[in-house]
Image (cartoon, rainbow, N blue to C red):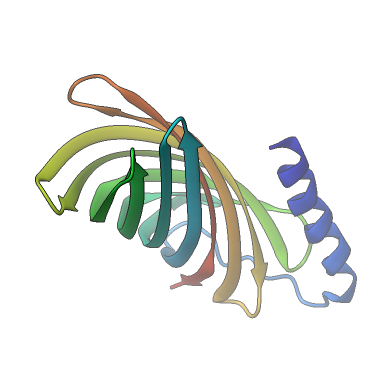
Length: 190
């Protein structure tokens, strides 16, 4: 993770040489609309077992700047996944649909005239539906993430966004899962 954060900071500083105008749209009273997308794959294998998953998710955030640089608001994420597993020669396929709702807070720090970095904290609940050939399962979980993002401002109200999040989710039966997300998208400041 240190390498990822260092890479984001290096990218921020390296692309700042051409900046002329200072863009600072995150002032008290402004609103934030952020959309980002994530696509990733997972695979695992063990004794007589193989599994592969493909995920696509869309994340939307709607925030209000309560002070210069500080925003808080609601966070929503929808995710669709497919999984194929082979267990002792038996093939199982399932589709997974997850919906997430929560709250976030972030603080934007101006790095250069067109770049800002921000730490982010999220608290959320998620409902996941596993639709399998033989049975369906619904799991409710709560979670939290911390992250760091970098925004490159195209103009005074639109920025390209990249962020990395880590955290955990806990289900009703108290099992935990780790979260690692890398998201790309854009932000609109109103």
